[in-house]
Image (cartoon, rainbow, N blue to C red; front, side, top):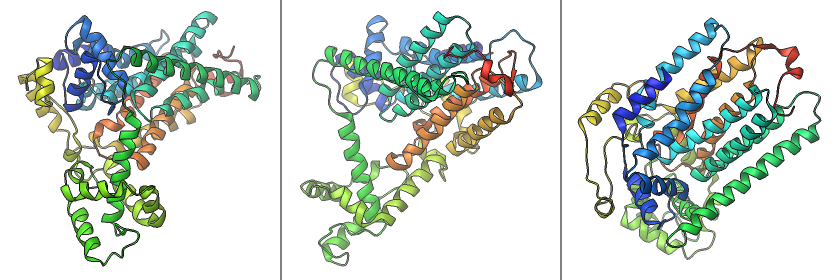
Length: 451
């Protein structure tokens, strides 16, 4: 059934749904000229597969394989399945045929790639713990380090996944192991992952047509401006040396409040007066920090409103619940030989997806709750299964990744937190796994990566 849903997703979406970002990254990969607004890994992968088969079809197969193949492996097992196994499997299949998974796995987005790489990372750790062959365990743990490094390269805050994977690796070792040995294993794994991350970036840099810009610097600039705008819109003075009641301040405040939107930064940055204000304030060192320090309540109110839109938006339609078709800048489309296109199957997929917009499916708070419930089931069940700790770490990493957007969120797009449903699918696949289970008191003698 998992393989069938994979084939259906490919058949409906191939060669891939391409949004503005997708088109830009494909052009970057084909030309080797990285603008720096996005982490270069996905653009490089698109360029690599584009040289083999022009377009995004081959990339789409790889990206989706990082999701569906781990699920197939996780649910495997020759033991007799219990009612809980079958229920978890049924819920997993139900999730896979919803538009959130069916369409997103056919969309060329770095958020999807990052989520799939994260699932593959923890799947390797689970398989390493299940294996009774030392060489296979070593290979799987090394593969997890490489996949974790790639996940960190796909998203700026993707380092969270590697940190939780390293902790899981240390905790999964058998009870006789000392804390020092656990920490050593986790540290060595983390160093291997960091080395793979650095090597990946160096390889991309070496093949780039020009030096890669700093995506972190660009992202921080957008984030800081959004924070300053939110502070002003929530009552903070625009000029520290000038009272709010001054004519100049009142004019700026009126302009910011008119265009400020906690659901996304886009409309605010298109305001000419706002742009002029930031050009002037760019000459003032530490302006963002001073605004946050002097107006903490206004900043917290802004951050809370932005995060609320990300996890529980009042109107999910404003948060790009799905993307279907091909669209992007005219120059980029022309350079790639693409045209704006919405195919008949895209229309059918949107009609199908739109029926779910009023349900909790596209609300990220729903997946937060599901992740907590799944973690609770794993923690509370009387008979533990090999790999439980890695699954708990995967769910915890998804929740921690979500929490980072309380500080760095700039838009409520559903795709930003796609790791949540992917991690939940991985947990359901693990719960559906048919394998001999061990009682809690026997865990100390169980097979583990540290044996």
